[in-house]
Every structure is written in C-alpha cells, then in structure tokens.
Image (tube, rainbow, N blue to C red; front, side):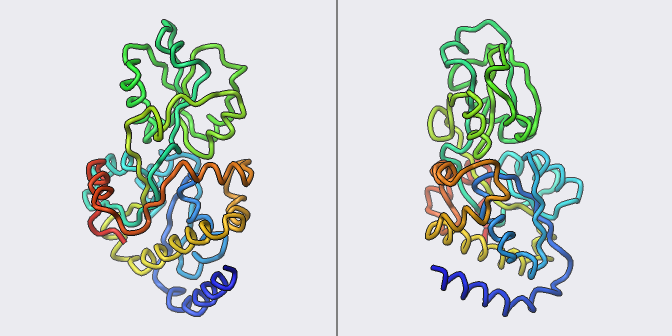
Length: 293
C-alpha cells in the first residue's frame, strides 16, 4: 500500500513542473463534510500546491455559495440545492466532479420524540442553514411526518454554532438540521436522530464540485488532475483508513477514528462510472451528468 502511495507521490513530483506555471491559482471552497474529505487529504499531502489549487475551508454550505457568488472562489463543492439556485444566475454553471450521495449523512435531530412533535401546540424551534440543502431536508421531513401545520421558528446558524447546542439548555421543542460529522457532537450533547437520508426522508442528496464553463475551460488541466487526486485519495481511504484518518484529522471536528469509520457508512461514493439508474436519479434531482470528469 505504502509503495503505491510513494510511487504516486514520485509521479506527482516528476510531473509538477508541467503545472507549476499553469496560469492563475484555482480557488475551491469546501465545507467539513465527510464526503469532501478526499479534498482535504489531497491538500494535507501537498498534492494541490504543484498544480496551483488553493482549498478554502468554510463552515457552512451557504458560505460556500456566497464565496462563489462574490468571486472569492472559482469553484465550490455542494449539493443540487445550491446548484439549482446559482444556475439561474449563470446558466453555464455545471457539476464537474462527483463525490458522493448521502445515505444517512444528512440528518434531523431533536430533543423530543416524534410523537411529541406531532402532538405539541408549541412553536417548534428549528436550527439550520437556511440557504442550503438543510431547508429542503426540513420541508421533506415536515411533509413526510405531516407536521406542516406546526408553527416553526427558523434559526439560521452555521453548523459550527449549531454543534455547540446542548439538549439540557433547551426547553422548547427543537429540531436540528445537520450533517456528518456535526451530528456526532450533537448526539454527545443529548440530541437524538429523528430522520436521515437513509431512513425517514425521501430526499436524494448528491455532492459535486461545481464551476462555470469559462473557469472550466481556463483550468481544465487542473480539474482533470484534481479528479485523479480525488480518486486516489478514496482508494487510500478504502485500503488504509487509519492513514487517511490521521491525515485529514486536523480538518475534522473532535471525531475519533471509530466515529470517522462509522460516518463513512452515511455516504456512498459515486466518483466512478455511473450506472444508468444513478444517472437518472441525479438528473431527476437537478444535477446534469453530461460532461462530468
């Protein structure tokens, strides 16, 4: 395994001269979602510098979107929700590289039982990132469990702040819309899972790297090489998860190896050749598959 990594690194160093002067830097923004960890592995290994890519670490999906809209990032990783908002402003926006689909990684936590939410006449506080897939998750949950008639108080916060909530300090019925690895800390803080993209929700959520046609054309060689790095990182993860975890640990929350391993069960990698069925589901979710690397 380590011989494979060494060989790959030597090839990278040998070929770095081809990329070191390859135009301007490509800035990519990413959140700390388990499905984006291959990007942080590539960064930690020093693979991105030789090809002039800078990875920007942000704490929310909406911040991701705003960085891109403001021109402070050239590409971003996110879900179909952010894509379907931004593509209305730039029709040339497109997914370039697929990462994963959520299979329990997007979750709804609470401080009450589902029956208590159904029966309550109180206002329900909901903590979430408003301008993100969190909103779609919430609406799917309310519809699925027939809670649309409830009065909802929306509290817009990034996931880092949300993860600091503690069950024993909240009196009102509360819902938390979050994702791996933030849900790990929230469970430790006393909240329990009510639904996820594995169970109790009908929503299909996929993650990809997005940019527009102009940026893709300018930085095409970088995107092609980045795709190879992502695939290589996922291979390392599958063959040597301990080494992968230790490498990306500085970019994660306080998550131990066992928790990291368990969280991998909440996603399904879709970086390889797509099946016809998955391609159809992606298109139905609003993510075009044509032109993917």
